[in-house]
Image (cartoon, rainbow, N blue to C red; front, side, top):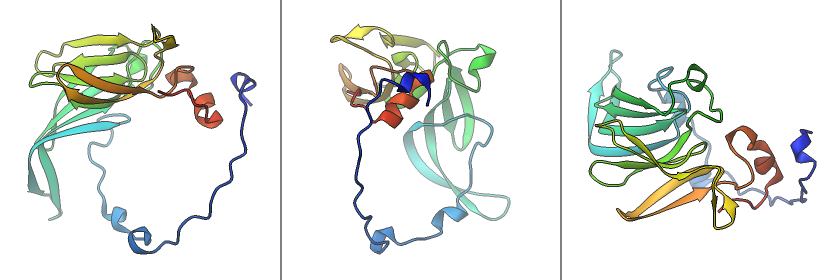
Length: 195
């Protein structure tokens, strides 16, 4: 076991018998017809904001694709804007080469993203904290830094956010003990360190 797991206390969990695979749980092959969009164009897409109407586009193989007018996506170290099925803008949280594939302490890992107002989106970043971005000006601002103490606990892994109104948001911190590079002990230990 990794060294950092030595202090973890594991509890025995007894799982119930799963429900029968009937009704909505009936096995199907619907996803076998799914098409992967934007393969190799973004790494680790996580959360989306969909805006505008939907449209159907005819593909080369006479297949139909449905696209929203505008989609905003959080991915490893970047925020992506897609308009009518095409990537039109990428905003990198860090432009360092080692950040383009894997999150490390100085890279960004945008997770949950929501629109805050007509100009600005807010996003939870598993490495950096709680931030805002303006897709037009490409300005990124940090609201709450990861690695700082708030209410006596570290902000270590901000992972989702929701907007109540322009002045009030709520966000989750998956664990105050670990960060993106050391998340495994929290996950496997099932520790109650989130809030």
